[in-house]
Length: 272
Image 1 (cartoon, rainbow, N blue to C red):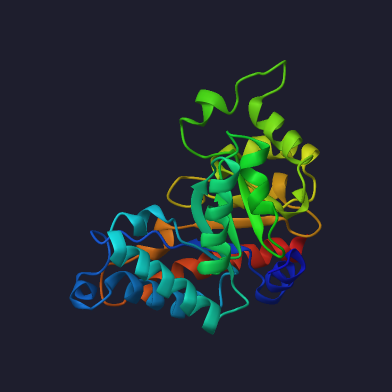
Image 2: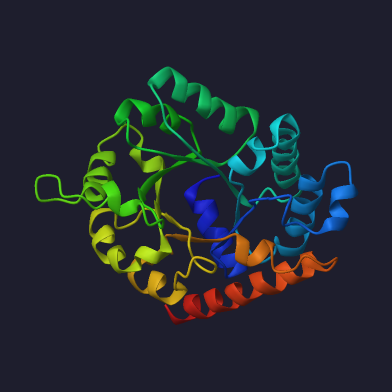
């Protein structure tokens, strides 16, 4: 999917919501555990109930890898279901990959060619040759970890390197890489006060912003400092939506939570 197509969907749905499909079998409704593939059945129900309210879904691959081959098969079924039934939806493999060049090439093929995701999250620590293999794929995006929402972000990401914070060095350097126009960036919602300076470095790039909802990020602050003329934001909410209920009406409850955010987003878009 191209950036232009993503922007069109945002305007069509009046939403820039991304829903994280982070499935924990200890948290899903108990009646699903009796089905042949409880992870997929949970995802399918969430997708069927919320697809009209969001523009993206983001499965975190750890929640599938933890269940071995059955978990990976559920991930494959989920992405195939999305691509077949809702091809307008932008898909993100939250895999946080990044390794030497030939290994990164294989990771890229796995997520872009085999599974058919539109994008994948990548760690920048190993530098240019670990990221450029992902950037070589046409109409695919690489979402680079820039400034994350966890407490440990301050261990390295905000350290000064020659009087410049490390995350800013990452942003600036990544712009010089081949096919850097295929880059998006992860910036946590709990770091909203940093967004104005981030936008000075990458004024037009899309940002994937986790942390709204359960982690305490504020949607209005993120939009105030991070929104661009082309929106430029994908706001992710995972637990706050998909675990809104553990009863049999869980899908309807998740849709209600997604609608709350979509209504807020529609109002923000109307005011810009």
